[in-house]
Amino acid sequence: MIRASRTWAPANLALVKYWGKRDAVRNLPATSSLSATLGLFGSEAAILPADADVLEVQGDPRRAIRVLQAARDLTGLRDPLRVVVRNTVPTAAGLASSASSMAALALALSRALGFEDDPLWVARLARLGSGSAVRSLLGGFVEWVAGIAPDGSDCQAREAFPAEHLPLAIRIAVTTDAPKPVSSGDAMERCRLTSPCYGDFVRDNPAAMEQGRWALADRDLARLGSVAEEQSLRLHEVLRAASPPIDMLLPASRDVIDVVLRMRDRGVPCFFTIDAGPSVAVFVEEAHADAVGSALAAIPGVIRVLEDRVAVEGARFLAEAP
Image (cartoon, rainbow, N blue to C red; front, side, top):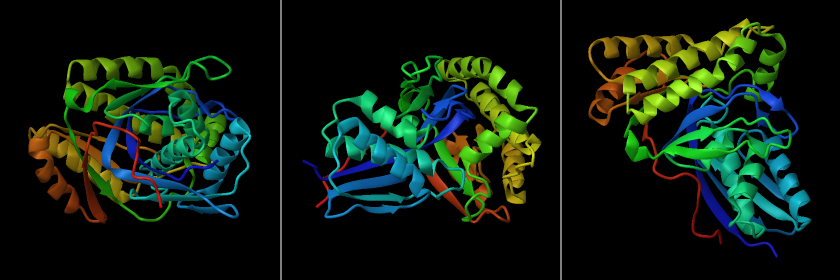
């Protein structure tokens, strides 16, 4: 019997990047990744019994259909469902709305189908919708290991460090509300097949992961920022080198980078990270967050600045839907 279920999952921002798949069917990543979980921005999902299937999903509905079909294949249940997924983070703008939405959906399905006590079941389901959704299931700083097992059994995420280990505010400069021109999935595959920079990016991933882990362990904001910024710039180099090229950055995106560099030169402890999209996230010590936010808001082309921080917890159940 289907139980009504309602969940919330936060978006996450990659510091060391997941880019490319080693198995497209199982949605297994070619690279390990390190991320920070957001506290306020993400997605809410609800599962309700229904007379016929109803899908109300922001973003690409194919992801939700894939997760729903996988859940039915795993359980054998065919009861009709109403599936609702709504985002509070900009959709398809490079801010991990697919990760938060699929994490929320997978967790909601786990309770609806009676698997809420099996975190591996939830993670497997979430990954099928969006690889990085497994990172949104957890709080703090999250490590997602790519693994090498063909069945994906060693591809798992864990909380590497809690949010309190290195408390950081986040200011996100949103540069457009328009969806990005190429989806992350399509961009990954184009890069894998055509970008001459892609192989080196994958090869250097273990070293980047080690540097990121050590920087976090030492609470070394400058070193962590160096890793995150290098990863961001290299990711966009890989994108631009693809054929045809993919340039997701806008003039305002580049202006944000310049402002962050100038503020850091003046002694403000901050760094930027950019995923596959035009918006730029800035990590900063809380005491300087307002100053950074004001500087970002003053940049022409920045349409708004979102305020958040690294979150203590990841995806969670809410009061059950009516």
